Image (cartoon, rainbow, N blue to C red):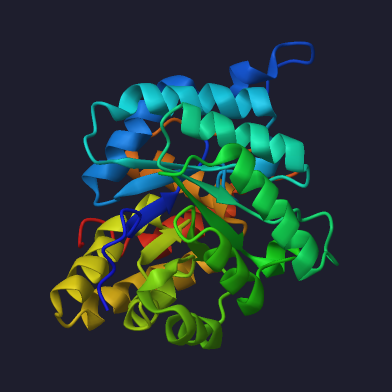
Length: 313
């Protein structure tokens, strides 16, 4: 049941530190709060995260240009030497194969441990053959033999995902480089099927906090979640306990309760940024349009619900 893969663990789908929008005409890169990147990494590492994913869905990845992504990726890379063992994964998937190749190659040139690649989401009716060709070209052109990519399976948002047959083809063709998937399908049956079909050979990192225990019982390697920006101590308690063969029901219950609260205040990026500011003293980071900052009355209600758990885990 225990995964020994180098990517196994608890990861935060990290928010992207972002100052309020700059006046028109200024360089968009100045909106990135690069000075806060080391502080956020220290915070996540101290609270039990094995690493962070940059520019995933929670990181508003599709909203950022290649130059903005590079600037933040470099800031994270420059600080990682001070956090031994802390892993970095970059979200590099776009509808453009050439841009995805460039971003993936950049991530590995900067020393990132893996890339998280969503299928080309604009093309929602792409066949398994087409997707296999897309990922094959990306891996062959951008992924070193000793590095890994994870597919991002989030069909409810991306509109496209991975079939079991496609996963098997990619794993057979690229047994090391195609490490596995982040499963954000919120599909308990799929979690069981992945375990039965692939066992620990496919690295599965659940994107659903409430499924962590169940997913690991089905040979998942851990999680990558939005809520880990805030509740990683409880997620790590579940992960550690599962690996030690202990009863994790109390920690899993706390995870579920907190995740269910956050789900009442979508979308995650503005809610998490506001909570990090109010509960942990981070700057009041903004979000990129079309997302909007969480209204004050909703934030106060969210704070009241989440305050029950602060300091107790």
